[in-house]
Image (cartoon, rainbow, N blue to C red; front, top):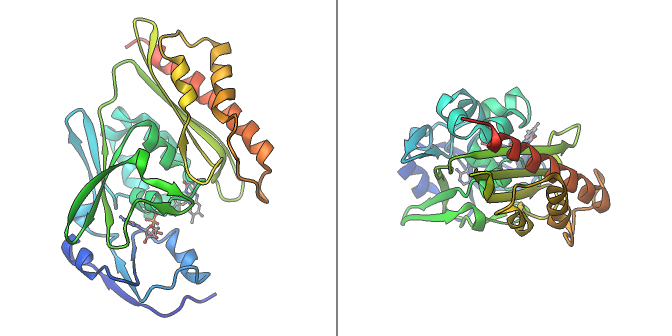
Length: 286
Ligand SMILES: Cc1cc2nc3c(=O)[nH]c(=O)nc-3n(C[C@H](O)[C@H](O)[C@H](O)COP(=O)(O)OP(=O)(O)OC[C@H]3O[C@@H](n4cnc5c(N)ncnc54)[C@H](O)[C@@H]3O)c2cc1C
């Protein structure tokens, strides 16, 4: 289908972009998720504001022990960052699995997070890493924890006049391991069910355990069951129990790609694999 007609403006700077945002406008970054919506007429904006080239929204900077990532940083730029790979190998690992070369060359981390597809790979990573998102409008900025950002399918805490401008990643504890395990829908690469795990250990005992899912529900979510691993050595049978408890009672998506029961099974297996790999990584010397 052909999109409805709209004006197209390439913003010169962030302030111009924020001023131009109005009642029926949409911002476009890489366009990989927005263009299909326009063509199906699921989005019918009067004006598209292109923020894809705004320098203020690009780049990866050190901040304390963590990193700040501009929202319009492309997946390609993430993969090219040695600093990102060294501090958050999980992000590099997950980014390599997103779409294909074209998607990674133009798609932006902020565009993917703002789009909030319930099966996207990056949102559960942000939950586990406990990222904070900076949201900005022409009247000011606010910080929203990733854990409060994803509200439902394609729905976030962003207000219509706000842009996601920055992703802030806190320093990770010492002795940490992270892993992503997913079962992908073959044609799109989106997760039928995916699990992200973070485990930190000190003196042989687990001090922090986080587990988040994508693809299972309306939005990515953290599994409180992961806390059962804290103060244990995380043996295989406990990991198995945690993976089982993590999906128990979840109302899983049921669609042409996979029935709910199968998705839950995949979620359980993904959780077990992610926790096991994260623990092994945390136990590695050095
Ligand atoms: C063929 C294909 C395969 C894919 N496979 C995968 C996959 O395997 N895993 C996966 O996770 N994803 C996958 N994707 C999705 C891809 O990750 C997203 O399309 C991409 O990240 C969106 O970023 P973008 O910059 O292109 O956003 P756009 O398409 O430009 O924008 C998406 C939405 O976010 C809004 N937006 C963009 N930037 C901002 C901002 N800074 N602040 C506020 N709102 C903003 C736009 O208005 C729009 O509503 C795939 C996409 C395609 C086309």
